[in-house]
Amino acid sequence: MPIKLENVGIAVDDIDATVAFFTDLGLTVLGRDEVSGEWADTAVGLDGNHARIAMLQTPDGSGRLELFEYIHPDAIPTEPTLPNEIGMHRVAFSVDDIDEALAIAARHGCHPLRGVANYQDAYKLTYVPGPSGIIVMLAQDLTKG
Image 1 (tube, rainbow, N blue to C red):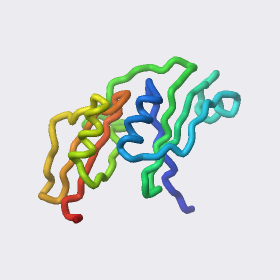
Image 2: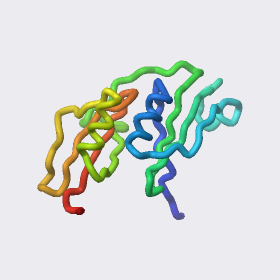
Image 3: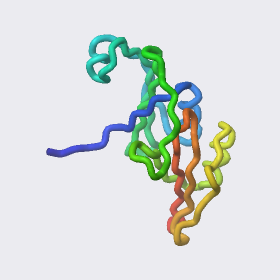
């Protein structure tokens, strides 16, 4: 059976701020909607499910994020998963210029956890806590260009 990754879904506390962060980094909005009803309750497994959603895509079309902000039931804040904890850890993006990407993130009040690492002179990479605590890995391939 062929299988393909469709998207990664992330619940956020402010969909507009999160969309602005990711679009500034270069993703495009494919669509926005507000969803509710029996089909949404069934799909998600929550009675009375009501959410604002936005689907974003990388410029090359290979990756998508589905962001959702719950109207009902109330969203439950959590801490980001630590690197050694089981669970969703991060979303990773390749960027052409990590310094430019970090400047964009900084305009949203988002800064690296501990700086920028150099992996064997092949990659510069960093983890940035983004909106709603989403950990975003940014990586620049130093072997290109």
